[in-house]
Each structure stands twice: as C-alpha cells, then as structure tokens.
Amino acid sequence: MWTHKAWQGHLMPSGGDRLRAYATWCDAVEGNTTFYATPSRATVETWARQTGDDFRFVIKLPKTITHERRFHGVDEDLRRFLAAIEPLGGRTHALWLQLPGSFAPADVPALESFLRRLPPDHRYAVEVRHRAFFEDARATAILESVLAGADAEWIPFDTTAFFRAAPTSDAERDAWEKKPRMPKRERALTGRPIVRYLGRDATSQTVDGWRPWLEVVAGWLREGRSPTVFIHTPDNADAPVLARRFHDEVRVRVPDLAPLPEAEPVEQGTLF
Image (cartoon, rainbow, N blue to C red; front, side, top):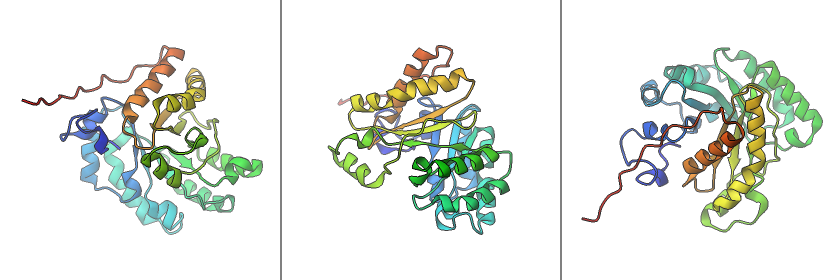
C-alpha cells in the first residue's frame, strides 16, 4: 500500500524511500503484495531499514498457500515465505491468512491442520469470506474454537457502510463488483485484534460508517488489548488522512493512547 500512486507528491514525497515516508503517517501497514509473490529477502531487508522497531506489518500469506493449494502440500512454499520475511523480526505483527469466499465450514479441518504446523514464534490472523461463518452459529463456534486453539485472531472486513447505497463513481462501481458483502463482526479473540474497514468516496459517509467502531476499539484498549485498524475507501486516495482521523477520534475516548508520528511534509512545486 505504501506505493499507492495517488499519495505520491500529494500526501508523501515522490520517489525516495516511500515506506519510510508512509511510516510517518501510519504505524501499521497491510502487506498485500506478498499475496501475489513471495518477496526476496533483500527486499524485505529494505522494509526493515525504513521502519522503526514498533512499526506493524500485517503480512498476507501467498495465494498459492491459501487459495490455489488451500493448505495442502504447501510446506516448501511456507518455508520460503517465512525465510523471506525473517528480517522484519518483531515488526511482523501478524501473518494474515485471507481465505477465498469458497472456503466453507467444511474446509475448516484443513485450516486447523495448517495452523497446528505453523511455528509458534509468529502471531496469526484469519479472514474468512463465506457467509456461513457469520450467519450459522455452529459454524461460527467451530471456527472460533479452531482459532482459539492456535491463539489466532479473526479479522473482520467491515463493508456494511460501503454497501448501504448504490455506487456513485467509477471507483465505487469497481469496488461494488469486487468487494465482498460481509456481515459485521465486532468480537476479538486475542489481545491483538485487527479490523479492516471500507468506507465510501464521501468522507462524511466514511466517518459515519466507522462511528460504531470507535467505542469497540476504545473498549479493547481499555481491556489492555492492542488493536490495529485499517481504513480503506474505494480509491484509497485519502486513506492515510482518514486513518489518522480515526486514531484521533479513538484518542478522544482513550487519552492515554499515544499519538501517531508527525507526518512528513511534502514539498510543493512552484510554477516559476
């Protein structure tokens, strides 16, 4: 996400160490590129150099593991992936298993077997997209039991605010076709809950949609948990600004929460 074109020269400097600039805006990032290919160790070493020890990476496992082979015969792929991300050290806040919508309750035994084989020196978080996990109490309980056995978190992807009204822009229409219509889930299973939230093009609608999360996240903090929240919009053009606003609104409720870093200024060009 830190290379998002809309941010360059607008919220962050063009060129240079883009992750370093992003880390002055937000203290966590979703590692989506690892879903498509395992990065080289040298690339990951540059990520580590550009971020502080307390920066959080939520790194997605490759699709060969979660989507194509669905946890079967993936030991070598997993070994290469874990070796590649090793330079991040403690910055790896969680390894993210995003599962396809076709991954149903009947497939949970494969997930359980995989989680049991994972090394204990990482934390894990699972995102499911089959509606039965949200709407069938038995399926919910089975998945929660499996995740609890591995001390793994359940990542909710809250798209309810986005799907409240028909799309009004090309970016919203594209997201309308591609994003899942997920029921809302607000329960945390571990001390490190992770939330993914999708708003709208209109900032007012995005903010209205996240209001219920403010008290949920504040409650987690009061309980001693350490939540991570990712704010998205259809084009993500202002996502870092919105993320900082969400953080500030949580701080109103939990004043002891540390502020985010001072955002790196962008030098504006001149006409002459």
